[in-house]
Image 1 (cartoon, one colour):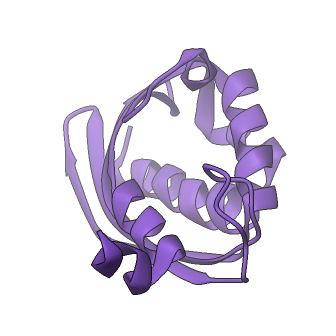
Image 2: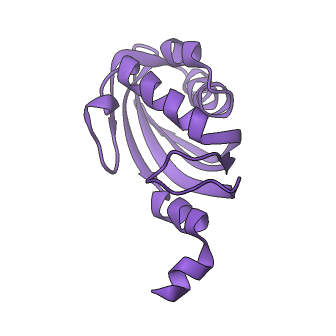
Length: 143
């Protein structure tokens, strides 16, 4: 598979799946049995059906999403994206109340592409940083 095709898969992942919340786009870029390795991995991280359920929760919890790829690096069947995402928190994460907080998330995902689709992902995300943004500096300083 050519580099441009792999890069198009990654850009679709961020533009269509995460920014727009397009559930149909998941099927166009991910294998039905895709596996995601990340913090707190559970059964919903296996397969596109479980991922779509998680994506629906995510889109309800974080609105006005905009995702950017800062760097894309490729080697053999893997392509790595360093990303930044911006959104507005609407509630639903760890019982943290929503005050329409603006949050920034950064991370790195390694995608393994097989037969033109994402077969596996390894994700390193700034989830703790997002929680800290939601709780505010007053909470952190009080501890």
